[in-house]
Image (tube, rainbow, N blue to C red; front, side, top):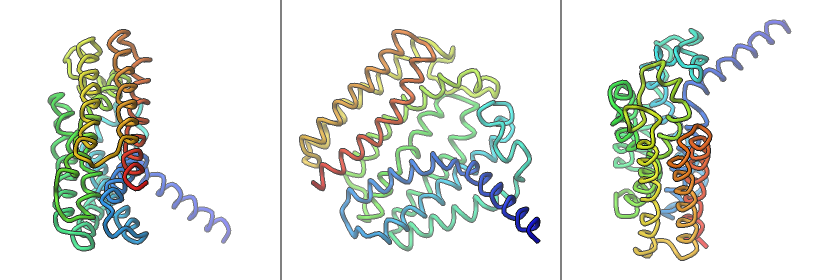
Length: 296
């Protein structure tokens, strides 16, 4: 009996690990964090139950999109070191199982957004799922324009959270979207630079220069980080964010740009890795600064 119980625990633990890899759990939680920030920023009907429901809906929709991504990229994932251990390419999970999960999770998540919150939030979340799963994913093997397409669903989470709270799309939703949209490019390109050799095995090109790790690719990354500096002043100009939040937005964007400038100067993997980690730091710092400056 103890052996049977132990085997069952092992099975469920392995399955839980497989599903956490299928939905890219760390990425999904970052997406949900952005969505919750947008919801709290709206300051409408803020309560624990709503935040929990928003988080569940976000996990389901994002998890569904990531599962679709892994289904469509199963052959590419098998070729790359960073993805070869995922459940589908290793055979630990069938395509049918992953597809059933993706379908059920996506539908339930969109329904929560639509029914519990409002139809506009449901529509935008569905658009995000479709763009990421069925446009961005296959486009990665065709053209680096995929980064632009991927930046749209990647930037929608804070806007979706805001829309879920307010029921409409306004200038604030667009600002939340815009900051995360411009952030996406340097974030994507830093990862693509660091993992360039791995992506090359799967014939995936995400860097803006078709020649790969070049100064031109680095310059593009710098341009988009520099764009975050004036963009960070827009919320203050509109009276949405105060001076303290604006100072943090500006200083963070300047530091982010400095990391991109280092990549332009050195054009090496070490600088790209610094830019990548800087991108991970930039977004939560900026979003928390905007939120706390509003509610203080």
